[in-house]
Length: 148
Image (cartoon, rainbow, N blue to C red; front, side):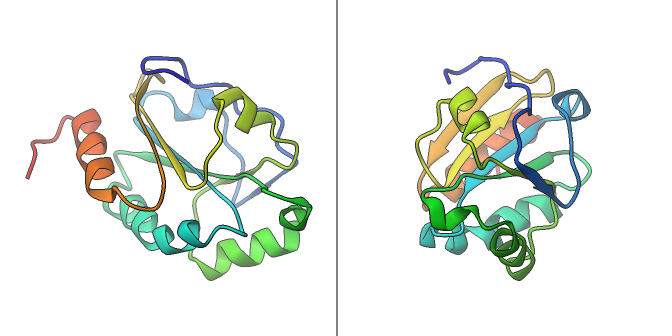
């Protein structure tokens, strides 16, 4: 995806954890979509910070998790659900067992973070376990908040 591209439709899930959402339900408020995998150590390390975003920006920012399997071992829904519970992932989680959403995003990384504005246009993308300060700055910019 390129900056200003439209958010893809949230279709092709092989399952959902913590409820299901549609693209239409996310529009009208900025959205952070993060890709993760049960076999990704960096994803597990970053989860507390993602949860901070969820809690801090609860009324201003939608957060959607996308579980992107990296191997056959990552397809067990019970393991995904247990990992979500164990890492306090309470936001809706799209299980992308067939990589439909991964392909729509042209995503190759976990963790990966996509920040969309209220109209559903991509405003920021980053991948990897570090850079949460930059992610916070981009989220604040999309929310129209002053830099601290």
